[in-house]
Image 1 (tube, rainbow, N blue to C red):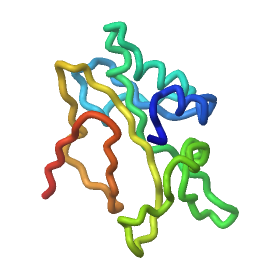
Image 2: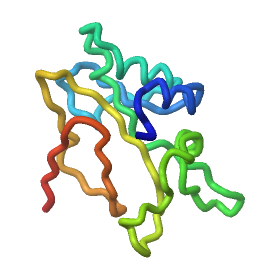
Image 3: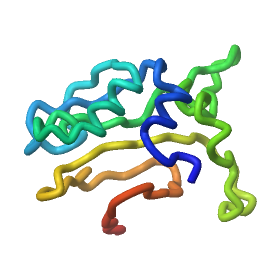
Image 4: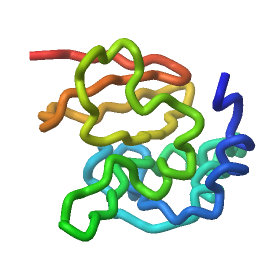
Length: 141
């Protein structure tokens, strides 16, 4: 496994500043929280916390901004993903001739006794979704 644990991710990009959604309560839906900047290793610490505080379940790493080139075209990878670039293929074989427009990392955590939903929404780009741990149910319309 290329990402065997949070320590590996922290060693690769821990000092990178990321935008994280922070919900005011664990009962709030994702997508409605406040966006706050924090170091990636701090976010990973929150995700790994097993202290029962619920703090890790209130935070969600969402889409990061890609920097634009001199002509104004956005890049393929955010600064965070650039730091992790050697850990994943930019164009997995399963994609065939499709050309990626963006690569993102979304990461969150819910308590063992609860679940979470991103709610009904539309993504503007096609997605290749890779679940690293746990389970996710999709309902496609």
